[in-house]
Image 1: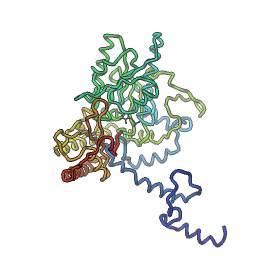
Image 2: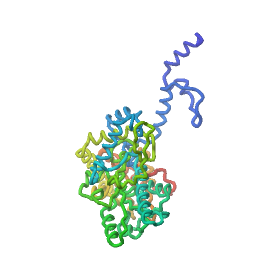
Image 3: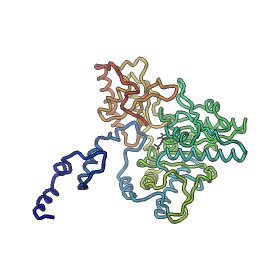
Image 4: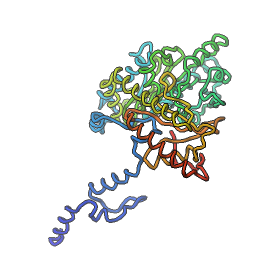
Length: 465
Ligand SMILES: *Cc1c(COP(=O)(O)O)cnc(C)c1O
């Protein structure tokens, strides 16, 4: 280094970040920069850009965790290098994952919880793929043993989350999705029976339907399939999509039979990162018994040392979320989960009651813990006359940082536009009282400034999960 440039460099080192040379220009966005940058400068650029994201705690569209305690942050940091697939190098993380599987099998009343099979996944979507594949393989094995064709598998569900549409398309299964109908927004046993045949690999009820947040009646569907078996011999298994509900019903609606207490329920998926209270990136699938997971889905690998069975779509995967899930199990126990989830239900019921009092809204689901998850779904009364659409209202609330999406229902009820709010851990009664004030203020605004041309589904800026 030339002596005369020393002073320059020293002064540059002491520069204020925002007065530095690096930050005096906009960085290239779509090509790799030519030069290195000071790491604090680069950090500030990225950190600041992230301010433009929404504020996750105010996002009432998502089912996922947005509040995590300090211990979770610490464990996530401690696990940043742990690769979940590498069970030989990280045997204790593998042990923790296995404990979580058995804890869940027990929570969901598996008859032999300690010996059943299950795995963590990246979320319920991957869990759904595995659950669907297990149903497909088991059906194919049964059919082949009987010498029958295996080219036309189908699966029956109600208004499902997109992951089941993906499963059906990616793995070539016909999805017989029961459409909504006037007052019926969920699957019913009668509609299931109309669609079952010998090529049905399984029926998938949802515990916490995405669109209305309500539980589908797993017991009634199971009973109907029992009767079908008595009459025809057809034995159709059930997989429960318990993405949200499988972490709620065991604590807040323990008498409800939706899980392995029903012999027909062969597998259950849940999102650890939703009401499991773990950070983003963990889901679970558990089979009723080891025999319900077809062996041809299991691979044994030995190139990481040891001989490990694996059944997952991913290979390398971070371990922190699983460790944090286990921490939550230990930290909260049944008592803590019940308290956290009950507080969410209480707040959801409060929100529903206050919205109903305002006048223009008709509550579709009011957060009743016997019927669904802690959330509220509402629509406009026919005579609401609020000077705007629910899409405009959602848009207006967004200006205060709230994400409370408006969206139209799926097949056959596209005419019905609803708005939905999820009440999660960390969405407090006080926050909801602030939201209610903002809704009142927005209604006042539209009353005095009605929208000439209200937003429709196509132009709405918000989105839903
Ligand atoms: C969220 C959700 C999914 C997808 O789960 P991810 O954990 O986001 O992959 C599937 N089904 C239902 C009912 C859901 O709510």
